[in-house]
Length: 401
Image (cartoon, rainbow, N blue to C red):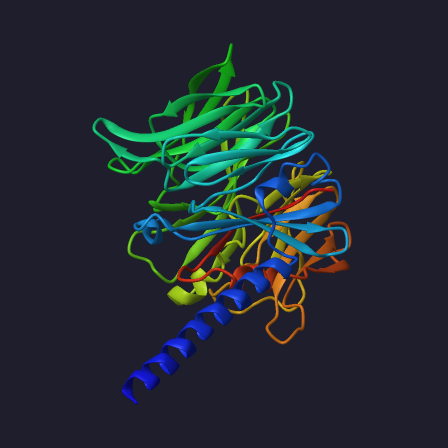
């Protein structure tokens, strides 16, 4: 009798295992939202894609080598395709002339007209990716960490013909692109000083040029960056948050403008936050620190974490609040919201738990401040919920068309 029960139990156990495997395999097989490497290798993969998002687990979640990142590409019908890679906190996506550069902690993927895969040594934190049109170079910079004689920010740069390696011996606070150069703001943590520097690639060799030491305004000694570095013909621009030592309730967002020829520095106050709690000040941090400022016509635009869009007239220096995105989220907690400027518009990734399609992005006119378009991103929630055992965070969002 006991033997009979053993056979029954064994049969039920085998049945459950087979059924579970069939269910999982079948679910993966029919899922329309996850794509494999064979798919992204196709030359026409990007042809119908209008936007890309980058999510990743954090560096501390990668101690077991099971961190994960996901590049999510949204097609013209609003349907998302997710490509899973290894994790890279702070990772991003570079837009080239005919393709994209995707990255994780060990591999670069060039997709588009040509596919190329580049292996590299382990990196734990991304800083910036980009594309230099004149020299046809993709680049990616990592905040690689402290080394024996200081700090290392590793650089890879190249194209489908191959990539070179270099190093910037500084901690990078923020960065940007100026024509054929990368502009970086580095920080000496011990001295609490910040330097603006230029990184170029002459004869395929990385060269660093010191530009200027950033000045502190009297009474202000605590700085954090609130934007990437932007440039036009005459100036470099970046936004910093200023605080006085020990003051946790007040902060100013200031535009730092540096003349390219004379290196003269000007500071223009954009907005002041007074008598705020720590949570309230955290809520003002821009949705996208690497895409929060933009020049359109004679105006420089800045969007903060409250959804407020400020402009500075680049000829008169007049500051005004131009518009606010609809129903901005109150509080410091974000659900993948990101911003991106392109042409005459501001694009904003939004999340609404009450909607059937919870992730979508809005388009706002920079001229009128009016919302002109909404794109529902079908499949993003399913892609993100497919990650098990790790939590992923939004690090990048770009419009491709």
